[in-house]
Amino acid sequence: MSANLRAVPVSRPRAVLYLRQSTARDESISLELQEIAGRDHCARSGYDVVRVEVDEGISGRTWAKRPAVQRVMDMIEARDADVIVLWKWSRLSRSRKDWAVAADRVDVAGGRIESATEPIDTATASGRFARGVMTEYAAFQSEQIGEQWGEAHDRRFKMGLPPKGPLPWGWETHGDHISITDENAAIIREMYQLYFEGRGMTYIATWMINQGLPAKRGGIWRAQSVISCLESPIHVGRVTFRGETRDGAHDGIISDAEWERFLMLRKDRSQARPPRVTNHLLSTLVRCHCGLKSSGSKVSSRWAGGRKVYYSYKCSSPAPHPRKSLTTWKVDNAVVTWMKARALETDPDASAIPGADIEKLARDILAVDRRLDSLTEHLVSGIVPRDSYVRTRDSLVAERERLRAALDDAEQSTRLTPAHFVDGVREAVERWDSLQLEHKQGLLRSLIREVMVLEDGRLAIQPHWRRGDPDIVEAAETAVS
Image 1 (cartoon, helix red, strand yellow):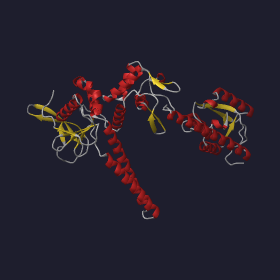
Image 2 (cartoon, one colour):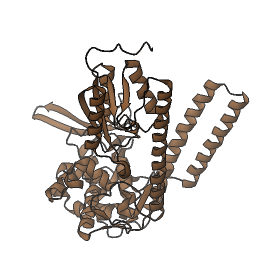
Image 3 (cartoon, helix red, strand yellow):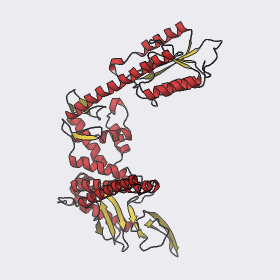
Image 4 (cartoon, one colour):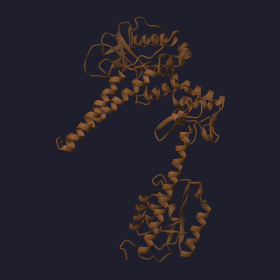
């Protein structure tokens, strides 16, 4: 007898029923049927049912994401139950690894697992072998189901249809095609427009609620539900599957340029920024020529006639250097003047100005790849020790990722012109004086990546639609009320 097995208790063994309703339609046995079978088994075996745990509508291929099965395992290990009763062996898991780990945990705790409809005496070697066959068959079925679904998803994807998962808000599926009403399409386009104007996801969610429009499945709009909606390539007429994107069989409701612009702004805004705790217009956008961020600064000065307050953008570096700060109104007025000229000009630039040499970046990436290949050959030949190889490899991989990100940005810049950015915000710019500060800040961030204060006091304004080659402007000389 195993040393881990518990002594036969005086009281009746305590059983916990574990029920799981599968996501697969052909094996979605009702929870009621599973519970009845489990209770009948316990009655025949002389067990007292102390709890019933249920994971409803969850795949047997998952384990950590099933809260009920975790509670069942905890009960056995805490000695709050002696037996786990299943409807079938496959209810516990369809994963070979998870089944082996679960069986070992239960054995170590001195408990046991039983099936109400597949009676096997796991106390014997032949019984444990039979259980192994049953769990292996369950894993085989799981893999077979996965292959069948994979083939179905792949076929839909090749037809230009969304392969799986729910559609974004506003869209409906009709089996062999998807569609959206003109009214819902107009609402989604307005959501993108609000984002282009600098509005945040929470603002857009509130706007949708105020329109009286429920989210998916009748829920309440939140920032995350807006993100899930706007990040779907279905709106631009594309579908994705396993990291691959292709044109869909449906027509998009936004243009390619609008989609590229959204992705660029989304990437930029997803970067961590310090919270805007001041009323400075260009908070988070101003950078010193030394490379560090400049933050809003407030200095009070007393003199015979009273007290005066000076506001400026000041470099965060403790080291002294030329042009460490610049008066806020000089920077703000110059940038707003530049923005209005860009947004309200009658003939925006017809083409984008590439901010980086795409061909050079591509060649640099190839050069790094060649160095990685050579480094690996030197490791195999024993020329380079393992520690040196790892350090150099990690450095080259990081450099390759940086170059690839720069290449992506450069290629994206060539597809977007200034007109793609300013056309959608002209109306907001015309109402500039009536906008609230938060909206003004968001509008500027939708057009500008950063504003650098140069040593000579001029400003280098870097727009979103290109990398490098910023617009150089003079700081304002006259305050504007």
